[in-house]
Length: 465
Image 1 (cartoon, rainbow, N blue to C red):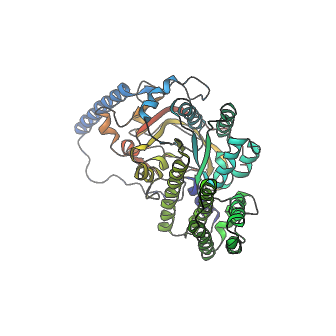
Image 2: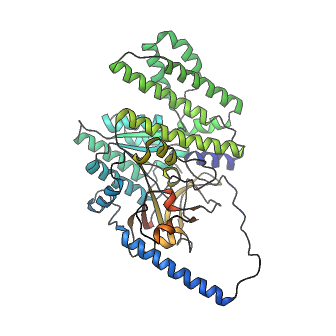
Image 3: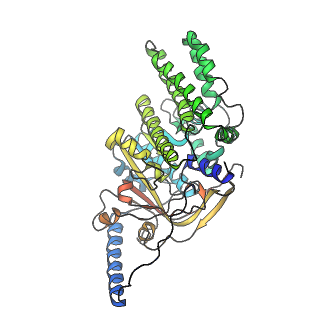
C-alpha cells in the first residue's frame, strides 16, 4: 500500500479526504446562445437570487457570537427549532475550524442549561469515549494526557484547544451538579483500546468463569500494546485474510456474551454494558476487515461506519435516557450524502431509528481557515480558502444582511424553500486537504436547520504535526 493510499484511507475513517479521483471538468459544447439572450437570463437569475436572499433575511435569526462563555439569549430561536428532539446532530463544514468547535460548545451549554440535554457524542472511538467519560464524571486521569493518548492517528485533529475547553467545561459542570451530570460518548469504530479488552475479560472471569478460557483464546494478540496511532498504522498493513480472521474472533466473543442472561438489577446493567463493550471491539475489527483497494468495499465500509455510529448513539439514548448532542461532520449528521463514498449517512440511520426525535443541524461558511492533514504527507497544517464560488450555496447564503445567523430550513418561505431543495456546489472540507473533489448538496434535503458563519479561523492544534 502506498503512503498516499494509507493516508487517504486513514482520513476517510474520520471523514472526507482525497481518496477519490477528481471528476474531469466538462468543457463547453454546442452553439452558444445570442448575447441578448444571455444578458436576459443573467438579469432574471440575479432577480431570483435577490428574492431568495430577501426570504432568507426575513426568516434568519441573527447569531451574536460563537463565544461559549457569552450570553445565550440569541440561541432561544434554536431551542424552539430543536423542540422536543432527543438527539440533535450538529455538523461542521471543516474538521479544523475554531468557530465550529466553539459554537458547538456554546450550543451544548445552551442545550444542557435550558433544554435538559445531558450527553455529548463525538465521532471518536467508543473506548476513547469511555476514558473521557470517566474523566468528565469522576475526574479520573489528566485531560491533556488522555487527549495525547487517545486523539491519535486519524483522530488527532480533535486534540485542539477548543475541544479540550469543552471537555473541561463538562467536568466543571459535573463538579457543580454532582447529582445531575453530563456525559461524553465516543460513537465511532476506528479503534478499540486495551481497556475494553480488559473490561470484557475481567467481567467474564467474574461472572462466567466457564467461558474465560474461550474468550481469552479468542482475544489473544488483539489488544493494542502500542500507542493508538501506531496500532492503527500496523493494523492497516495486515493481510486482508488476517484482518477478517480477527473480525471473526471478535464476533464470536460478542455472540457468546449476548447469549448469556444476567439475573436482575445491577448484574443486568453491568451485563448490558459489557455486551456493548464487546460489540465496540467487534465493530472496530469488522470495519477493518474490508478490502481497501476495492472502491465498492470502501463504500461498504463507510456505510457500515455511519450505521455503527448511529447504532451506538441510539444505544446510549436507550440505556441512559439522555438527550444527546451529536457532533460530527456535516456529511455524517445529514440525511443526504454529499458523496458517493457515503451510501447512507449517520443522520439517515438515526432518522430511521428515531423519526422526528432526531434533528440535523448543518454548518456553512463563506470563507476562512482550518486545520487539516496534508493528503500527500499526513502532516497537519493550517489552510485558508477565499470567498465561496459564485452560484454556490454559501455565496447566496452570505448575501443576507446578517453576517452570522440560524435558519430553520423546514419553514423557510418561498422562494428560499425551493432554492434550498436544489443541489449546488458547497464547501465540504474533511480531514484531508487539498481535496480534488467538488462537492454538491441540496441543503434543504440534507438538514433541518443551518447555522451560517461569514468567516471562520483555524483551531489551535495541540497534537504532533
